[in-house]
Image (cartoon, rainbow, N blue to C red; front, side, top):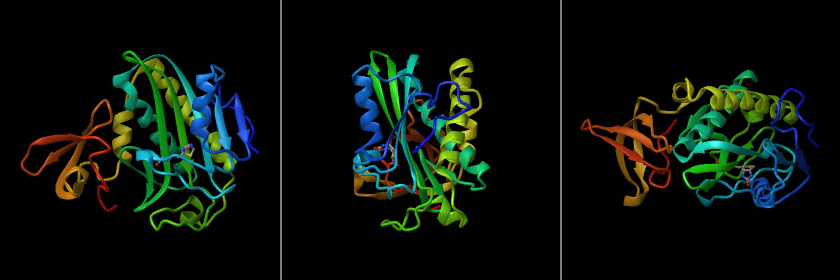
Length: 257
Ligand code: BTN
C-alpha cells in the first residue's frame, strides 16, 4: 500500500495503487488513451508480472521488495527536440534521492542507475507525439530497493549496497518531491544546469573507454563521451580527433565501471 505524497503539488496526488499488475507503464498509457489520466497521476504496484524495460527487455522485480511505478506528465508545449530533458531530470532526481539516503550512484547513458558495475534502477519513458510536440509522457521507474537476490549477476539493490532495509514509501515520496521541483524548474526556466549535473554523474564522461558497436558484430572502439544531443544521442570523440553520435540501438555495453 502506498500513500499520496504529502509535499508535492501535483505529482502523485492522483495515486493508483495496485497490489499486482502487468506493467504500470502499460496501465498509465491505457488511462491516457481513455482520457482519464490527469497530469501527475502515478500508478504504483507491489508486483509487476510483465514489467517492461528498454530495448524490448523485461523488467523483473521481486514482489513487494522494490519500487515499480509510472508517472503521467501531460505537456503544454514540449517540442520533440526537448525530449531528452525529461530523461536528464528523472535520472538526476533519482541520483539526488539516493544521495540523500547515503548511496552515491552514477548514470549509465542514457538512464540506467548504476552502483559500481551493477544496475540498481532503470527508467522507461514512453512519449506520445503529435506533430512537432510531445503531448504526454509516461515515465516508468524501477528501483531495486530491498531485494537481496538477483537472477542477473549485474543487478543489485540499495539493501545489498548499504546493508540496510529501506522504507519504499519514504523513497517514493522523496523522489516525487525532488522530481517535481526539477520538472517545474525546467518548465519555467528551461534547461539551466541540467546537462552539467547529468554529466557530473555520467559514467565515463570525459574519459577514454571501450565501446561496443552492435551494428558491426560488437566491434570494439575507443572513444570519449563529450556531449549528449537533444534527442539523447551520445556524442563521442574518437581517437583520430573526429566526433560521432550514436543512439541507444547502436551501442551495447559501453564500458566497465
Ligand atoms: C530499463 O530497462 O532499464 C528500464 C526499466 C523500467 C522499469 C519500470 S518498472 C515500472 C515501469 N513499468 C514498466 O513496465 N517498466 C517501468
